[in-house]
Image (cartoon, rainbow, N blue to C red; front, top):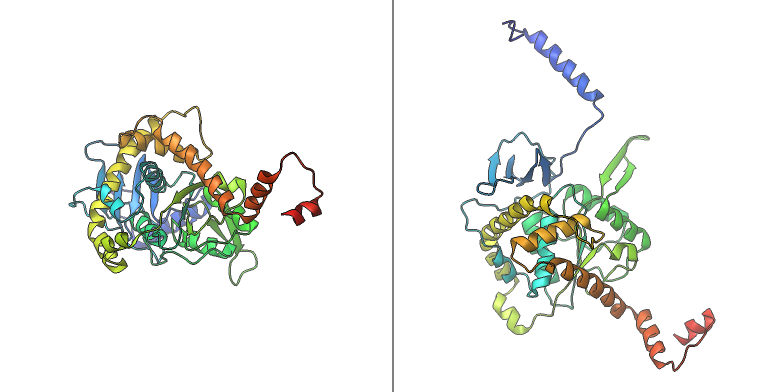
Length: 369
C-alpha cells in the first residue's frame, strides 16, 4: 500500500491485524524465551529483571558487552525474578567473589566458575552443583552468593527437595533452582527427574479447570543442592554432579566476616565489580567456545567440559588443568558418598577382617553386616 501511495483506512488496518493473528495461530514452531538468558543471531542476551533492560554479549573482543533498553528480544518474566546488579561504569574484579565464598582450592574455583558460566548458555546441558560441608562451613551463604550472580529471585534458596512438585515449581519460575539442607538420600523418582533437569526433559500436568489442556514445564535447568552429605545414590545422576566440599569455618574466619549481616552488606557493595568481572570472563569464553575441539576424554557433560576448557585458557591455567580437575572431582565425589554410607563402611570393615574369600547367603550376609 505504501508503494501504491494508498492511505489505509482504520477498517483495512484492523483487517490486516486480524489476518496476521490468524496466520500466527497456524505457526507451529513457537519458542518460549528463557526467563533469564537467550541466544539470538549468535549473540547472548541476559535479562536484567527490570523492565526490558538487557545485557547483550557478542564476540566483538573490544566492545562485546553492551547494556540495552527496549530491545526487540522479549523475555518471559516471572513475578519472583530479581534484578541483576550490573553497572557498566563499575571496575571489573571477579577475584572479589572468593572473598565471600570459602573456596580457596584453585581447582575447585575453576570448576565452580565453569558451572556458573555454563549456566549462562540457554542451549547447554547443565551439571548439578552439590555443595557439601559440616555445620558452619558457609554452604547456604555460598549458594546465595552464586545465585546473586546468575539468577537472583525472591525464591531465594528453597527448602529441601521432597516431591516432583518442588522441582516443577522451581523450574517454572527460575533459571537456577536451589535447594537447602538436603541430607537424606532422595527417592529414586526424584533422582530420575534430576537426571532430566541436567540433560533435558519435560514435566507435564493437567491445567486447572480443564480436562485436556496441559501445563508443560521444561526441566533443563542448572540446579544447586547443599547439605551435610550427598543426597544422591544413583550412578546415572552422580555422573552429572559437581562436588564442592567446604571446610568448617573457625572462630577466626567468622571474625573476619564481621557476622552474616555485615558480610551480606559488603557483598552487595562489591557485587557490581564482581558481576562486571564475571561478564568479562563470560564474553571471553563466548568468543573461544566454538574453537574448542573435542578432547580425547569427553565427559558426559560435554557442553560444560568445553566451557571449562575455554575458561582454562581465559584464566591462564596450564593446559589440561580443567580435565584433570573434573576427573578428580568425579572420583572424590564417589569416594565421599562411600564415606558417608553406613552400609558401605560396614562392607569395607568386614572385608578388612577377612583373611580369605568367604561366601555368604543373603540372610547371613545381612546378619553379619
